[in-house]
Image (cartoon, rainbow, N blue to C red; front, side, top):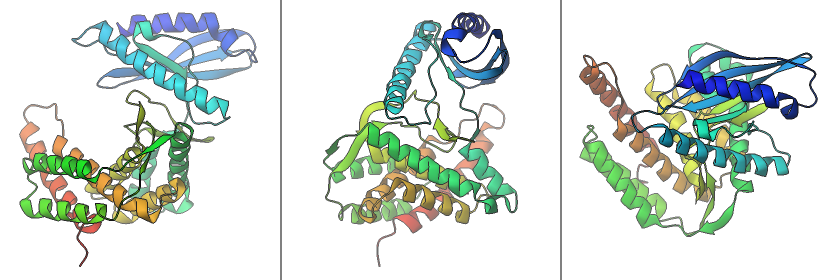
Length: 341
């Protein structure tokens, strides 16, 4: 099925290449150079060759799965709509960092765009953690700053009216996720510490919070760092309106969660979060809400556990994962939400 879809996409790109890239010379070839399988989709890397150069294309093809092609089409339509909305908004303001759509392939269950060349921010973080001296060249901090600037721009150009802050709703959600974490081994003392600290922080927050379109999946893995800055290529989970700080909190939580790996120390993750927050321009008053939202995001990761596909080792790996995450969550709670003395 995916192979047939790629053939149709390649054929359409051959037909429209001259229109898509009028400044290039004669079309020479459209070729597939690789693909990356994901649980719900494939990402195909396509090259359009012209007489005077080449252009890279990314084709995201959703897997039909047991639910059938209609589900793949629905997912593709949703992402295609989100992508086009954001691209038009950014293009109107002459902003970069959003890939250009290259036609409508949603009936094939696919989304096709120009490829944003670069490496995921998470890969840069891992290199900085593993390779001595790698972080000293400043690349990691610059990339973190650019990620914060991109998200602030995204929220600014899609901004809506601020929404009243509902501390009780946030506390209710935090308590529910804490209960879910109890099944994974988080003890009552840690839960009490989290809830008490969160309530104390939220009692200082009275102002309305910013709202905008939200990515819902803004993590270091989804931020691509290239020669021309940073870009975000996946808009599948985007909502037209939501609490802007949810994106900020998820990014911070995803960075801090990397500390579960022994080689990724707190000095690196703290620098990344600091640079990101400075670029996003978070005020001290807003940090109270963000600390609670970040803790909730971390707890949600812990509650989900780790998905393991190998049957024989599943139990052992899940136990190891729970042990590591339990220790990490307790440490995160102590430093982020501990009640003031």
